[in-house]
Image (cartoon, rainbow, N blue to C red; front, top):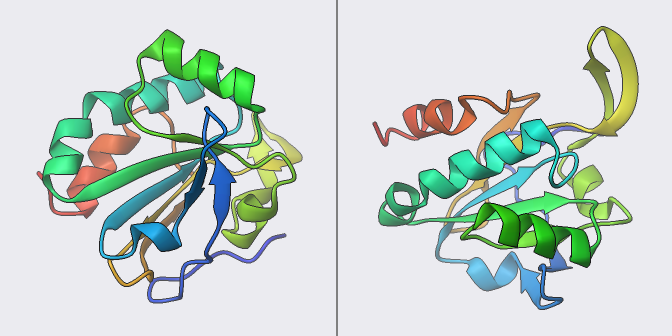
Length: 156
């Protein structure tokens, strides 16, 4: 199993292409609070629920100083379709070789409907302005996740 990140640890830096192929680097976001969330697959029911929840809460998250990045193993065309179909207002990043997933502990064994499988672990990692893990959340539920996250961040 991939090692999970702990609060206070340095967040692993990464550079991944967004849905347009434009490189996005965590390093370039220093000085900002960043919510990095990992989801299994674009345009699936749970991932759509979660992405739309982030979209619907974007004004309050940005108002509190947070930048949101969604990461999956999907290719760029799939990310672009997902973003367009759901009118998402934040970057979707492609990690097809799962390097960033593994660095963040978001890939490994998971329990899916009572069956142990290997895949993306739905995870959200909040990174502070200094590039340190503020809040690591693993095995999150798609439904209600953003409300729970807002509460943990003291935004409600």
